[in-house]
Length: 311
Length: 311
Image (cartoon, rainbow over all chains, first blue to last red; front, side, top):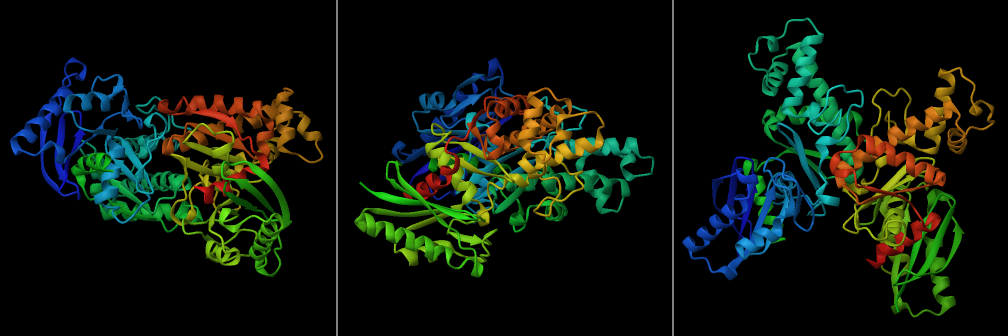
C-alpha cells in the first residue's frame, strides 16, 4: 500500500493528514502557523512535522507518494504562489521549496480550490465529475472541477467566484478594491451588511434590532421565525445567489453545486432558498443542476491536498 | 498519414472539410442542409457526401480517423443532442446515428463550442491551453477550453455565456425567455436594440437617425466618427462586455479571450474598447488576460470538429 500527506495551510494553524492511497484518512494533527519573519518558518515547520511523523511511524520512504498542500493565495499549475494573503509571502515556487525540504514529491494548490477538489473526490460531490464548490464564509471562495480535474487557470486565478460582479451600482468597496462583488452580498459579512442597510432604510420593528452583535445566523433565524425585515434580507441574499450561481452554470455547467463554509450551517433553509432562486433565473439548459451541502467540513482541504499529489 | 473529416452543420449549409492528422485543411466543400421532414435527411446526406468523397479519392478506409461534427444544440459527452435549435431535431444520439451511417468513428459537439476548440487548436489562441472564445453575432455564443480540452458540462450546457445575466432590471425578454442576458446587449442585434433605446430617450441629433436600417456597424462607425449618441451606445456596450468577460475570468481564468462573429469585424476598435473596459472592472488576478480576434472565420467550426475526433 502507498501513503501520502494532505496539508491545509491556514492563517493560524496548519492541518496535516496522513492518508492511504484509497483516500482513507488514517490520522491528522495540527501545528501552529508561524507568521513571524515574513512566514519563512512555515514550510520548514511543515517539513519537520512530516519528517518526524515518518520517522516515528517507521514508514519506508518508498511507500510515500508525496505531499499535497493547499495554501491561501493564487497558485499556478507549476506550484508558484502569487502573494500569500495572510502569510507575508511574496511570489515563489512553494513546490520547489517544499520538495527541497522534504525530499518528497509535492503538489500545490489554492486552499479554496483544493477544498473543492476534496469535496469532489470524497465529499458531497463524490459521484460527479463536474462540480462547483462555493464556500460562503467571511468571504466567498470556491473551486471549479471539470472532468474530475481542478480548473487552475492563468496564474491560478480560476475559482475566484467571490469577485464576480453582481451589482455595478454598489457604492461601497469590496476588500479586493472592486465594487459590487458577490462577496459583498453572499458572505456572512455580506449578509450582515445587507441587514444593516435594510435596518437603516426601513423603520419597522424587527428582531434584528435587538441583536447586540448582528450575525448571518441571526438573520436566517429571524427569517425562519417570520420576521419581515429578516425575510427581506434573505430574499435579497437568495436572489443574488440565484443569479450568481446561474452565471457560473453558463460557463462550466456543473452537475452539482456544493455549498460550504459557515453560512452553509443554515442547511436545508439555505439549500431550499438557493434552489428556488436559481430556478427563477437559470438558463433552461441548467435547470437540472443539483444543489447539496459540503460534507467534509474542515477536512475538505486535507482530502483535496492529498488528491492533488495522488492524482 | 492519417486523415479525417470536420463537419460544421449550420441551418442552411453543411460545411465539410478533409484534413490530414497534422491539421492541414486539404479540401472543403458545402452541401445544403435539408431541414424538411424534421431534419431526418441531414445525417444521411452528410454520410453520403463523405462516402462519395472517400470513394472518389480512393482513400483506404483504414487511413480515416473518423468524423467530427459540430451541431446547433446542446450536446453532451456521449454525443447526445438535446433538441437541435433550427433543425427540427429532438433528443437522440447524433454519435450513434452517424456512426451507423458512415461506419466510421464519430465525435459530436455543440457548434459554438467546437468553433472555440478550432480557434484554440489552430487559430487565434494556438499557443494557449486555457481560452474562452466569445462569438458576437446575431446572438452571443462561445466555448470554454481548459488545459486544451473543451468544457462540455452537464447536458452539454457549458459555454452558454450569452445567457449570463447582466441586468436584472431589464424589461424586455431575451430569445431564451430570461431577462437581462448578455445576448440582449452584446450581440449585433443587442447593440442595435441599445441604440434604438438611446435614440428614443435622447433628442440630440445623431448620424444614427439617418440610417434606413440601423446596424451594429453603423453604431461603431458613428462612434469612431465622434457621433456623441453612437459613442454613448458603444460605451454602454463596452461596459457590459468588460463586466461579462471579467465574470467569466472569475470562473476559469483563461489566458486569452478571443472575440469572433460578425461584431468582431470592428477589429482593433472592438479589441481596444473591450480591453479598457475589462481593465476597469476585472479582479486583480485577471488583469493580465490577453484579448485577440478569432482568425479562422467560418472555418473555425470544421477545424474544431476535426480536432474533436483527432483528440
